[in-house]
Image (cartoon, rainbow, N blue to C red; front, side, top):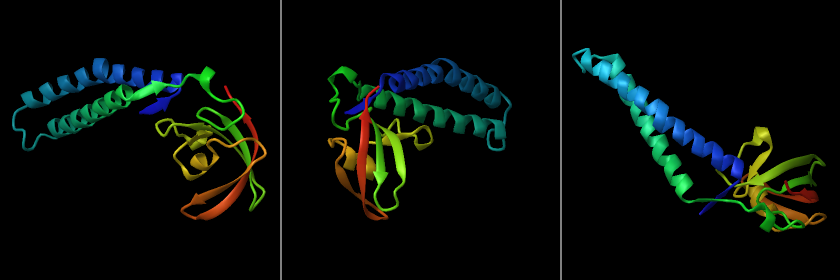
Length: 155
């Protein structure tokens, strides 16, 4: 079971709909046109259309599986005083004094450039369930370090 924000669930649903209703039919048409050109062994357009078809089918199946096994997070049920999914957490790396701020999300939403950190990442997993003011030990591949949670806010 995966938990997604409502926003991300809708994004994935829209992508799936676009792939099924727009992109796949276009690829199917391109494949038919390329097949009609004759010799398939030396037909670049046909091979390219087959690759695009396989990639699109793979993405459709992936999205269907993700959406089938996902639930939208009920923000009203989230704890307000502890780090949980969708919590925006400001913390300080105690080794170098650097302050960071990330929103904790499921791994299908992770996007570090947009400030979204996976709850399954070393830092995200270490922060889960802790309160503001607590010092948390993070076990990462590069080594163990400590962070102090400065604040927690919910959307």
